[in-house]
Image (cartoon, rainbow, N blue to C red; front, side):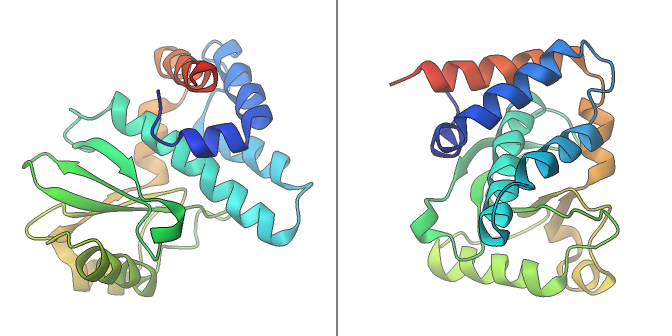
Length: 198
């Protein structure tokens, strides 16, 4: 069962339709870009505020499935992803354990336009919340993760955080899940199991 079960159950209709659709594509146009397009399509009927929340929630669900599937991939290297309760979310969406066995903070950033880079200010907020509120030390390389539909982070973000920051960008996500039949089958089963659980 997914730890993002609250998001899955809140958006159960959309999750059912979306993940069943991608499973049934059998590796044909089952891409991250197509997933983003489908999420945008579902969001179009929502208010501006609800649209923003929905897109973020859908990215968080996908991220958890992704982290579980690719925990041992050296480009990912994050295990035991756990979402932060909504009432405690002041810039950190979740936390996990990096390849060095250290606790790290994770932020999701949905960008409708992938050329809109993740900004330094956004990741500074994540860093501050992780250290001061969640008491995650954030020491060493790859202790701050961003999972995003953007191609990259800003130059300022790279300059300040350096090797502390692990960027799981649109390109990396696409390389792993585009037309990956096994991934979409597993994703569908994760959604189904979560919805059927009490």
